[in-house]
Image (cartoon, rainbow, N blue to C red; front, side):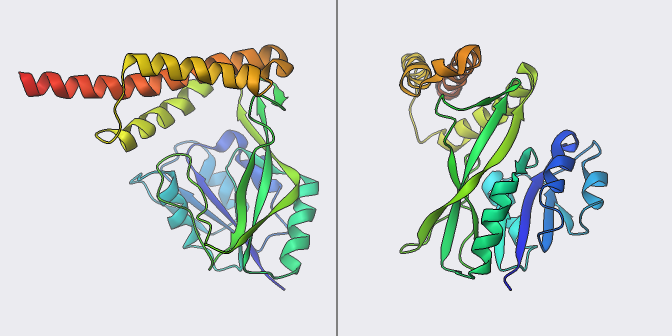
Length: 258
């Protein structure tokens, strides 16, 4: 019988971690948690479900953090989830069925359904949201991306879609949204500084097209007021990313001229 382990990276995840761990407890063989310096009750909650708890405080990005977390698993399969995600019963059944087949040359994508501001978002480019999260441990791991990290897919290996949703309880308030996106904005600009040129014009145009894409092309208007809010917030995030990159470039120019 193939074994399956949960890969989790955490920091101050106490608010959502228990529901996350409850959804994978009892039917998985190991839970590896790599924490990056939690100061809330994350670790005490984690200890109720697993003894495989490690720490790595020198943050090098989400991709590297997940790579390190995987080294603490010895199971045949890895299921990577976030601390604010919950495995639905239908998804659990799908996972259990495929690992029985022991096909260690196949990766599986999971459909993520996101909850934001009190509602599941079923349009706006947020759903369907297929991501590879179940894969053989010895076959692959995550890439090195600081943000928006992905499982590296070996050439010639197929990806099969699993049935059932991974429920993503990501945003309850605007302050929480801002806190999350600030980290992504900084990491995005860090990766591109010195490699990609920006300008205020680019910041405005990219933000405008992001709004049109989410609200019109991706049918965000069908999500009602939530869809409008998310399109505006996403456009602002895109504007800030490009503006931040431009500000860094201008700052370097001023220092070089002074």
